[in-house]
Amino acid sequence: MKDWRKARHDFERVIAIAKQVENPQSERDALDGLGHIEEAEGNIALQRRHLEHALELTRQIGDEYSLLERLSAIAHLAIESKDFRVAKLYLEESLRQAQFIGAKRRCATICESLGHVVSHLAGGLDACAYYDEASTLYLSLIHISEPTRQA
Image (cartoon, rainbow, N blue to C red; front, side, top):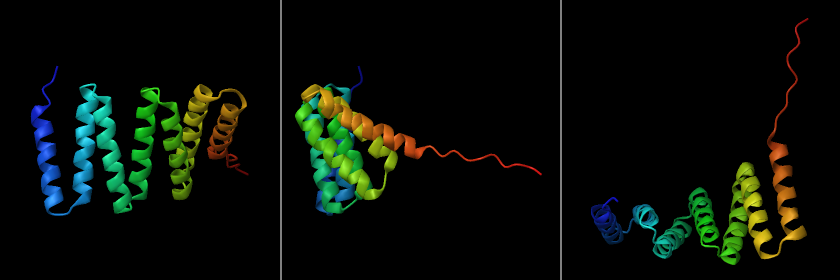
C-alpha cells in the first residue's frame, strides 16, 4: 500500500498558497489531486467533498469544459455509491452542459448513463427513453461517405 501523506501534504500546501494569491484554478487542480488520493485510499465521502469543492471553483472560474468533467465525475462517484437520485441530478446537469458546449458524443454517453441510473430508480420506459436518445446520438455521429470512383 502506498503512503500518500507527502502528496496530501503537498496538495494542501498548494491549496493554501493558491488561496493566498487568489488563484482558483490552482486550488481547483489541487483539490482534484486530493480527490484522487482519497479515491486511492477508499475514502469516497472525502473524495466527493473535494470534487464538489472543485466543482464550485470551476463554476466561479467559468470553465465550461472543466465543468462538464467535474459534473460527470461526481455523477459517476454517486453511481458507485449507489446514490442514484444524486447521480441523476448531476447527470442531468452534465447533459445540459454537454449540449451547451456541443459535445455530441458526451451527450450520448451521458444519456446512456442516465438510462442505467433511471433503470435503478424507476425502470421501464423512463430508462428506455434515455437509451433511445443515446442510440440516436451515436448513429448521428457515424459518417458514411461514398468511395471515390475512378472513371
